[in-house]
Image (cartoon, rainbow, N blue to C red; front, top):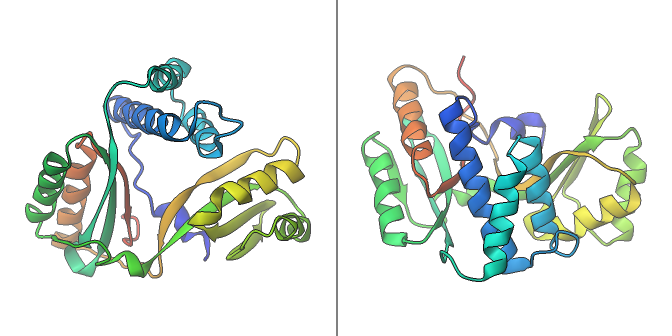
Length: 240
């Protein structure tokens, strides 16, 4: 799958204001994950991975703790996942993941971002078939065979495994996330994941320039301004 996956997810921590948005989005996702899957990170591997990612992105501990405490109360907002997809300028493709307590509002906001930038929102499945929905684990290790053996012993379906510059990257189907993570943490003590999440990875990337690039950047900016948007995946090569 190559290293292109590292560019597929739009970074949102560019300014202090955007960092605050990132903290808010992590807080919402941790709350939903803990509420639906359990408060104990040792039993809820998705929550454990999410907390680890939040810490790596320098999310304050009080944000994480507040989200878990909120989930412990059992009340609060009732967020549901929503996914939108469609075509952008220059034949680009995008998938937008949201957590919303008002699907009608969220759909309207996301649709406006599409229409105001000459993009076309589609139905579910419009472009998803052009992406792999994969769990990705990247960590420092120098023995690819040992990693593969640990995964095979746990009957994990491995899509691909790469070894480059002292780093191992494992790709599995998204449905194998929990089993793959458990196998890796069980086999390698003190493993430290550089990447540990489920992503949409495009089969091919495209380059857009000029007016198309300006419209695409505006499209991303409008989406990043929406509180309900959690992740944006696309197939556009990074700009200069």
